[in-house]
Image 1 (tube, rainbow, N blue to C red):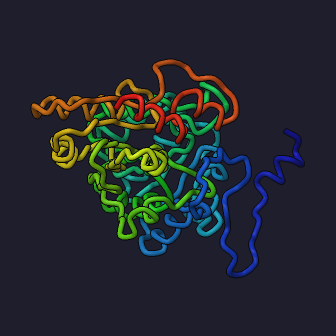
Image 2: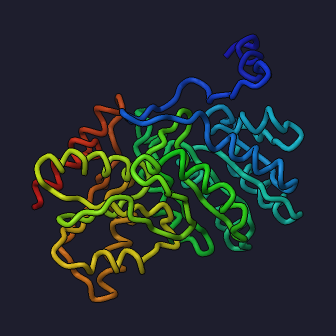
Length: 344
């Protein structure tokens, strides 16, 4: 990188009065035909919250443009901290600020938080139960850059960490709703982030939908199959349900945006309704994620339905174009519908 290109990278760009800023280029786009999109919902929701609460700070590790934190940095530059490519320092600084009474939001890529900075998160944040909010882009298979950037095991890593709340939002509606509830939650939170122009999915299927921390919500009713899903796979499950309806297959979709604590009461009540195939769907390895958590929770309650899991395999994934990868690993809409139909 030349000095001139570095200057352009960090140059502050102001928008015309009243214009809403979107996220930067280089976005890992997601297929979301038929849905409206919202530009950088996390960044704008954080700015709105920070205007009401002076304790809120924004931090990132050289990834402001790629985690929507650049929205916050331009709106509130005196409350923004650029930590450079040093994720351990990022998390330690956030812990220190939380000890001083602030509410720091720390952003990076999910692989860097879960792999590179785990010990610092565990010792400096989780053990002390500090209110640090960790928001991470590129969760699961949302980039084609390969294993170095594909955080396919982040939920499994953080599920075993005491005091840590885990959120896997489906869409812009979840992201906007989760920010104030993360602030209200007293302890640390790890949230996956869909960045850039994010689809608005849930309210199209359920107009009264509102994110509730720790709660699962039925988005679509159905008598033949119950899909218990999280993250972007709720969007895929809903679209697959529409496809399957043409084949007279009635699919219910139960959305679980909070992975920990998991709403096992709602999940168990729905899974106990007899006769339905129960399928979990997640943008995460099948090892240690939503599927295993649901299976363990149901069996511990004596509920044993026909059960299948849709998720990423227990392996390092290929690099390539996202539509190709999603088809290859079975998380595209068509592959979700195909698998469900084959299990019936």
